Length: 293
Image 1 (spheres, rainbow, N blue to C red):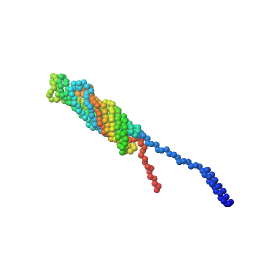
Image 2: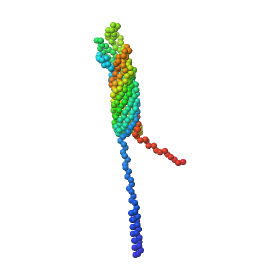
Image 3: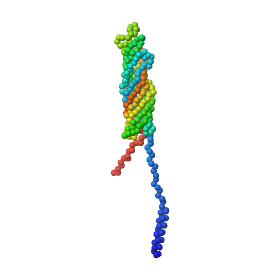
Image 4: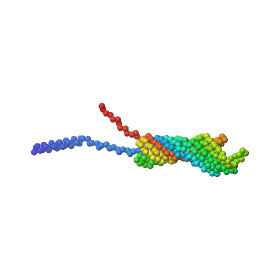
């Protein structure tokens, strides 16, 4: 009986000692909580751009600056065209978010040869006569635009976009000549008459340039090669304003003080461009493999 009591007392003492030891142990701290990663930022920052392409230009009409010179024109049929010329541009821009961006661009638009002709009837000295004028010249421009674009979503890394721009153009005209024929004749006594062989006339001008308000509409496709590099294939319709020559000298060598004006010059441009994103993080580069020999 005594041995049983001794065993019970020893067991109770051991239980009390274990409970006291457990009470003295520190409580384990809960594992630290980590915040979820932040969503990607909805903007892209600054970028640089470059473009190269070609233009397909047209002009509404060609007129002398002295409109009174045309007051006796009965009819005028004019045709003109420009040769294709190169377009070279650079710019800097900012992506506001994943669908809207803006940039400022500067373009040099290379020399394009102009060929044109007028077929007209006119009245002078009480006589009706016919004639033709043939024009030749070269034209180039500087174009500065502030542009805004809307990206229309991305499929398989291709993003269609549309945009518009406003700015200024400097249209430069050089080498302008006007060679014509008409059937208005004058005899030795100074009397005018119609008939006989065509009479040739010619005029040349000094080089001239003019600044204009300009605007453009854009559309195209962008392909993201990597986070820093995007390629573009784009079309632009550009209104360049008007151009003017220097003063006219006619076939007699007299300086008439007038100029020729090329009114409403427009262009359809096709360009290949590249955008370099300055805000994209550099691509991950694994550390070099180190081995112990």
